[in-house]
Length: 112
Length: 110
Image (cartoon, each protein chain N blue to C red):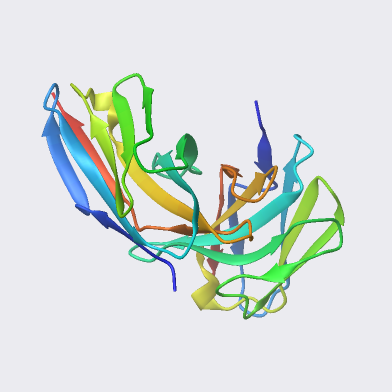
């Protein structure tokens, strides 16, 4: 079974803090993704990576950056957290283009 | 721009009352249509992939079908444990990205 794990289930941070969200997958997948999910807006892609050290912007990259130093690990960074970044953050991985993505359990981030 | 629309937004069924969820899409070059189940506070769980019109997939009480413009998730004799949000997504072009609909929230009561 594919396993995608995320470093925290719940996180509370203050405005202006730098926030790191970590994601690890154990199936040697090439592709990894970061989404945020908000009521009424569905899942929106922030960034994705198709190889180590490679990244591409998704639909809403502003205020975020990512890092992929190892194939199994993909980090999402909020350089200076703001209240409008309060959301559920979901990480996913997939083996190839056009194939199903497997999701982690999510991190509920609250920025005060 | 790729678009995915799911209907209805919410559906309440009694146990045993079969129904269908709809996912209509407008894309250029469909590479796959994906169905997921999501329980509250959890990540989406993969259910099915459909690649071409006419294809069908089944799993327990769920059956997914695909036409050139839409997909249906048929739920036969649902049970309360089928209560969840069901998400539809499309993959297009050469990228690995998926475009998601906003989901159908299903509640099955006794």
